[in-house]
Length: 303
Image (cartoon, rainbow, N blue to C red; front, side, top):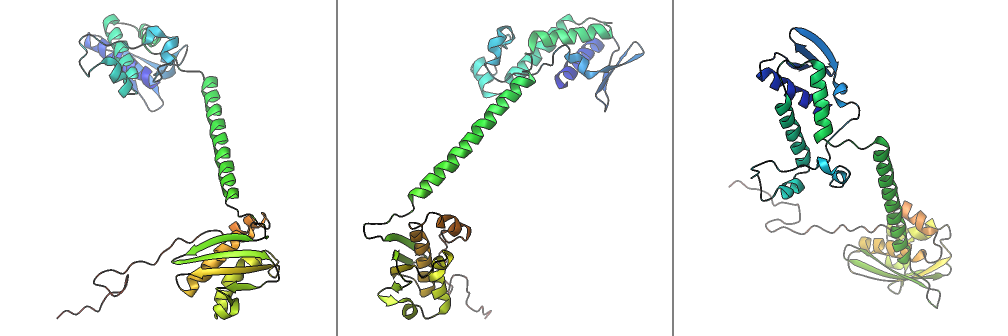
């Protein structure tokens, strides 16, 4: 309808320039009012599009079906290096060129004193000559359904691929029935070996209660074993270095959760919901020059 209005307004302007009094007015209801020789004729705007709605075409393959509608460079065209390059650089260039050719054709064939029906027929003929027909609704919906199917398959493939990659990261039991995993937190690195046992945890050749004196840190280390529902069915031997006691406890917790997946893959879903398999990558903020710490400032003295 937008292109029909443009052509109709252009035709009316040309008629008025040639001496006929026929202004075209568009009101809020999308109605074109043609006042010709003092007569008022409300004309539905969509009548300019009969019998088939037409629109611009930005795809090169659309012109294959209508070779006679392929835009041709006007005489003396000097906009860019070549007409074809301008068509490729501007997606709306074919549409603009078609509209220019349609308006030029109307200007050549317009005559003073033309009636409303003659003007409508001329606008329709200009559409038929220079503007390719719009694709059918069925074809558009078919392409849309195909795109949706491709996107769905792509999402499914991405999800399955991510799951496959994650399953490869699950440790496997060695010949001695041990599961090995590594966990990190801040500057701490923990290497753990988990086996079936009675619930003993040894950290750097010390019992858990002797290495971590604070109950909160011992609960942090034992958290993955408690989630399994069988906290006393596994033994753990841990080597941890770097960082403080809090960072070491969190590193051991991450390593223990990763190692326990080797005994039952169903543990992975429970650990992920509780974020036991999520590594905390936060680091201590560096000290700034001229300050005692990362954010702390010295007391300011005016004099």
